[in-house]
Structures are given as structure tokens and as C-alpha cells.
Length: 141
Image 1 (spheres, rainbow, N blue to C red):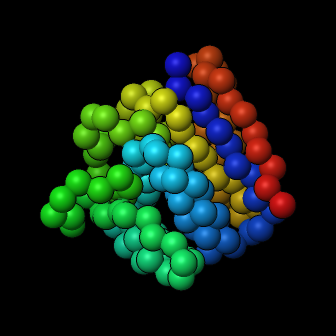
Image 2 (image 1 turned 60 degrees about the horizontal axis):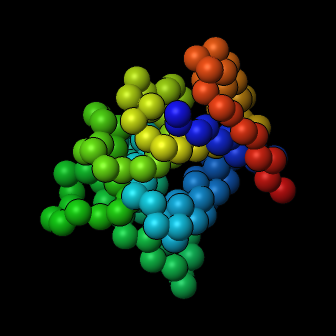
């Protein structure tokens, strides 16, 4: 059964949420997982792609927006459809849960104190729990 992890941040800004998402992406990649980052739209996909390039000068996470890469990469970013089979983990930056989330071993959700994010992710938490998935909360900072 898919393990769901919620990371709860004290910050209110979307930038802080994306910065933590970059750090979490790096951690997941370094543990050897293939990761899919599910976002709400192309603008957020491009913003996250750019932030992954810039978040640390001493780090490199091989990644690409689905459709932009020439060769397979361990971290994909998309908003349109499910990723190809074989990816073990998903970071969900979308306000809603994609219907295909259960194909992953692990799903990570990031909550910060932005009211829109709080409202959306509370609903996600309740949906996972209602469906019987194991949910863990990790308070950061």
C-alpha cells in the first residue's frame, strides 16, 4: 500500500514551499528513487524546473519536464497525465490528489501556512485517511 508523507512547514510563501520541494526532491533522488513531481500547470512546472537548477550551487538533480527531455531522467515534472511505469515516488504539488497516486510506493505532500495550500491539503489528508492509506506528518522547522 502506498505510504503518504505530509511535510508541514511554518512558512506562508509559495517560494518557501518550492524551496523545500527542491530539497525533498534532492533527498529522494539521492536515496535512489525515481520521482515524479505532479504540479498544477505548465507555469508551475517551468518555475519548479528553474528552481531545481538554482536552489543549490553544489547540487545537481537530473530532471526534466515530461516531453522536454531527450533521454530518461530520474526526476520528471508534469501536470498533464500519469508518468510512465517504474517510477517509485511522487511529490504532489498539485492542490488535488491525482486518481493514479496509488501506483507509487511513496507519495509526498507539502503543506505550508498559505491559506489556499492549507485548505487544499487538509482535504487531501482527509481523502487519504478515508481511503485507509497510512499517513504520516513531519513538522519541519
